[in-house]
Amino acid sequence: MMLGGEDAGQEAHRGFVRARRREVLGRWVRRLGAGLRGSGSDVAGRLACFGEASGSSGVLEECCRGFEIVEVARISGSVGRCADFDRGFLPACSCLGDRWRGVHLALRKGKSLPPVELYKLGGEFFVLDGNHRVSVARYRGIVAVDAMVTGFLAPCGC
Image 1: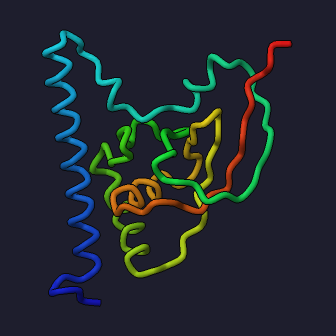
Image 2 (image 1 turned 90 degrees about the horizontal axis):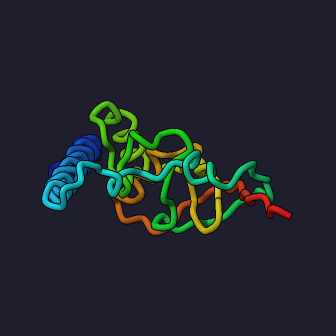
């Protein structure tokens, strides 16, 4: 399929290259800002990790599971791929390119993708399965995704 002289595969490749450039630029801007403030950490750019968010809560209790349509902007972290994406879900490694481009291409062609799997803790959502789908959705400006959500409650301490 050609779109204005560019096929969908080339569009997916260019999208990944742009997403990587945004991530690298963001990392450099954060490092420069941290250097000016005297802080060497890039915590502001890190994707939130479910293990860290739930660690201070003690043992979590699974409270519910079901299908939801979740706003992509409310997905703030990952269960196991925290280092692979930045806080904006931009790919942090060129090694993610093949999978990222495949998801981009599938969405571009209108293919139906399975719902992402999310954990919900408080008001935050963390990706268990579907990090690349969330990344591409954010990049493409998709507002919401289908998701299977497992909610967790922190113990009440009673």
